[in-house]
Amino acid sequence: MTTEPASLESLRVLYQSDDYIVVDKHWDIRIDSKMWYEKHTVQAQLRQRFPQLADPSTYYGFRFCHQLDFSTSGALCVALNKAAAGRAYRCFKDRTVTKAYLALVRGWVEEETQTLDFAIGKNTSEGKTHMMCIEGTEGCENPKSCQTELTVLEYGLYDGDPVTKVLLQPLTGRTHQLRVHCSAIGHPIVGDFTYSSGADDAPYRMMLHAHFLHIPLEPLPLLVSAGDPFLPLADPKWLPQRSLRTLEATVEALLAKRVEEERKIKEEERERARKKEERRKGSKDQRTEEESEEQRRQCQEWLSEWAGD
Image 1: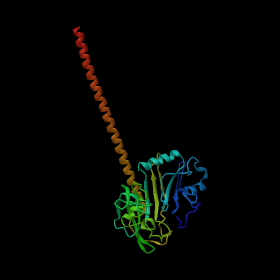
Image 2: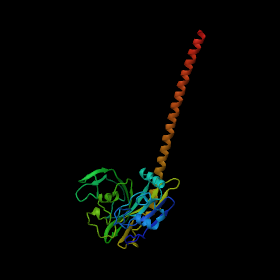
Image 3: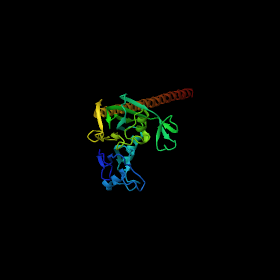
């Protein structure tokens, strides 16, 4: 990931098939826009690189399976047809997609692994309507339950100030969720101008990157990694000092945990289906037994009447 601004030519493709393209979205670029002056968007990059794949039946030409903020970089999945979009949409809707983000946050996060659990709503306060906020904040409207898993990877300095490199796994999908949650625990994301009240404007970008994406499609899942842009080689201002765990091992453990959770869910579903079938069969057998008893009773009555005759 370069420190240079985005251009129409700077589209990096991570994965491509007949149904999907996954790109490494540049920081500070919109996915799409209806504004005539927005020349640099991911949609425009795709049209330039893959004009033959644009679908004229859609407004933008490409179907984006999910969203990434303007300031966020990383893995972004694009469906190339309506059927593929529907399959991916169902995975996102059923919350079976696994996403993991890399971030540099201000200060040193003491608790190495934690679940951030703050309900998030729309901020209706004057001058902040473009922002989200946690429940209890003045002007917070319609807060909804949100959870994020945070894992500390490294401690270090950014431009001389203490920062922590973390892996963030959103368990829900609220707007600006990761940015709001990090800010709520007193560790805003480095370069997040919006949620630092405009104070954190020195870095060249916001340090939030969609590193990992796993969509459990059938018959083969889509699994993509967008690398790690927060390395001293890419940005010399970032100076790691103490590593707690590797990114690779952390992501591998996260995915293994998710696969095990999915296995248990499917096992429970099969068990529920088996019990339902047993109940249905038992009910049917009971009805058959009741019908047989009724038939015997009617037969006895008929025999009695016949004997009497």
